[in-house]
Length: 304
Image (cartoon, helix red, strand yellow):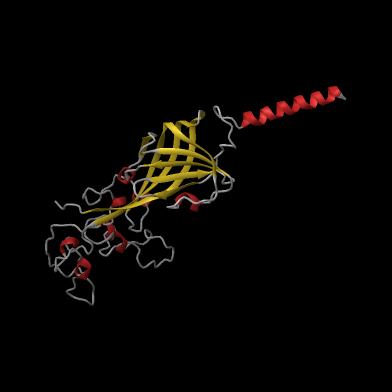
């Protein structure tokens, strides 16, 4: 009986050591430090953006408070932020209960749940992978405007970010299959082709084939040929092949397109410390945020 008790005691010590070691990452025992397959969230502060990810129970969280220049998110690439402890900070917290999203975005720190342990990054860096999608909202997706380097009107804007592909001051969206007569909701199946020359209006600089450029059939000079009517019963002059009035225009309309930025956030060579304790993580993928930032870019091309 005495021998059996010793064996059980020895097994208990081994099991206890195994549990402790499975939670050990550096020199400190933690609850899990498992953030795999969890959602990355954020709060927009005045000077920085707080990204955070919680574990499945919500009792642990990694917080990355980063100072971002949002203009840098308009281009695809990788942005790197050194964790200095001043402008860019990372903190690991353990709570006595689940912390909901409201805890992290509150201007005044909530009294509950309570932080029972906290470690702060003394070194490491945050890397942000930026993936962008540009869209001119002209009714065509980028795949419909291939190749992506195509610039039909030569105004310096590729067609997929040019809301007026042919440069006639008529938005592309107004020159597609606007009536959807075939009912297929595909703007490209029956795009308007007023002069029946085989070139759809949205790519045709002279929509009615009268030899006068559509952009110049703008009698009032407001950069909008759709509101100039010599014969209202037929339609605007730019669609009336019997009207040859020309008012040369020297400018394009203001163009807008959207840049949608999605991000992946990863912490590298992370060292978290507190009171002589240390957690080291070579790689911690915090997560992804699709459509993190949507920016409208305004540009007015110059007409040669």
